[in-house]
Length: 287
Ligand SMILES: Cc1cc2nc3c(=O)[nH]c(=O)nc-3n(C[C@H](O)[C@H](O)[C@H](O)COP(=O)(O)OP(=O)(O)OC[C@H]3O[C@@H](n4cnc5c(N)ncnc54)[C@H](O)[C@@H]3O)c2cc1C
Image (tube, rainbow, N blue to C red; front, side, top):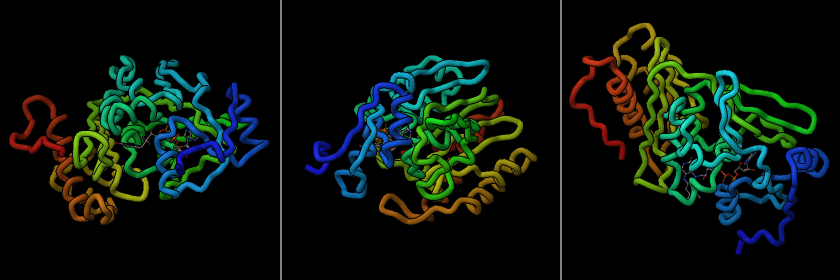
């Protein structure tokens, strides 16, 4: 069985300090969090790594709290814990909505926010939320702690600024003003990877982020600017279709993704319209 880890090296740090020291002195080591992505990679033979660092037991990386006015979520916090969190549901409901859409309940109980970020799939459901929320990723090594704006974290398809001797330790999210909105369009209710996923905030400067339409999660800056300037939603839809770069793959076609992204933008704008201005007749089904 290819997922058996017995022939592989798995280091078991007891503390975060130990883990960071092992990454520095005994690396390269691939962190194991909930393993929901790692085991798929091992099973399919796409992950060749043989030396792992099991961080699952590091409780310092768990938990959700508010520090000052910043929501802080530990990297090992699972999707299920995020869905259940009153703090998240109050301050960042679009993240609770996104985590509720990740896989099915088994995956939500094991998969972590840090794993979703580090895995870096452009279809990762939490990623548009973190982009629209202008979150920060906290990275730690044995020597330093640094905080990277989420918008600067990814450098390309599944590539990021994270170094091999660093771990994601937490995500910090400043207060988000405005109405939050999230939709995932996939094939079925559970276990489906998104064809298009959008998170957005309706404020004087709207924020719109999408997944599965480019090599990384993207902010739709031109679309945001047009809406902030009072432009028509139909014009914003045209701009959005121009500024994304979806591809054809086994899950969907490029043309379908552009079409759906424009529909989602309209749905966002309609759902979050000030009372009395909502347009009737918009299709709210996302699957
Ligand atoms: C059946 C199934 C359905 C799924 N459905 C969805 C879905 O609907 N939406 C979605 O977004 N994802 C989905 N996933 C993917 C996966 O569950 C998520 O990406 C999950 O959040 C990964 O978290 P994990 O803790 O399991 O990561 P792991 O598998 O443990 O790790 C993933 C990667 O991140 C690295 N890593 C993990 N934690 C850290 C850290 N703290 N610091 C540095 N590197 C780290 C690992 O080394 C590895 O490279 C699905 C997976 C499966 C198997």
